[in-house]
Image (cartoon, rainbow, N blue to C red):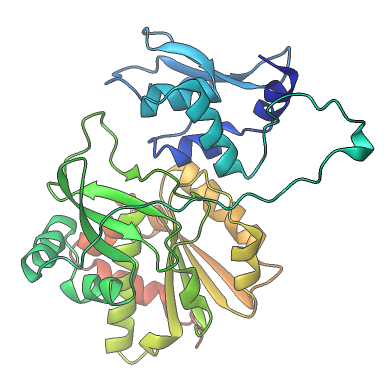
Length: 333
């Protein structure tokens, strides 16, 4: 490995790569392999003591390597393409070779325009919206609001009819099968190539909003739209004043653009009940507080112990009333 590539690979964070690839769980010293159906924790990630790169190893035989090798294993691409994709997603350049010019005479770096994910999307049919409503056990009104705002779409991805979380800016596309079953490798959601994992879904809607719901992942994004509709029906808020947004995974760090967009807003973060979700919500809250008018974190496991996320609570009998009761006095218009 050249010194230039090795230097670049030291900047590639395992958590971000994990999110970009749409892998489930959290990368850590002992976790389930994201590639094979792992019944035990046979996968490890760790820092190389020699050069500081993030490395991985599947003790069940899938292989080992650095983040470029993981990208190759998951996507099936070659080494050169894996490096190009990492460069594109991390916004960094790899030198094709060492310059023969002195450093002060080297050509200035040129900012690379990030490619956008591409997939043929559609609005879905009434029957598909009803089917998704039944699958997620959420009111159709919330799903239709998500469609209206450009955040819920439908598509055929890898030959499978899917419901899709996307954004009017086109920077992120995440797909889940309409069947409710995971993808063939056990992954629940697949991000389309070139998806920017740290992009806040729904970011453009913050401009006119007073209240911002921040969720983790696609199902909670749909659930939060259902909650917003219900709060508006009760006359507690104006629907137009609520922006419903999501980050695609707990391991994602909001961009500076996202943090700045929270300026003057009342932010409500819906934290998944697992430790990763709680820690992510607290981290996001800390990043938003210097900008937002107020920030509230609702730990969903504390509201309903058997629920793991907002979708779970809303699909539970009496869950909507529980959420409304917990929010009264906490959300300001």
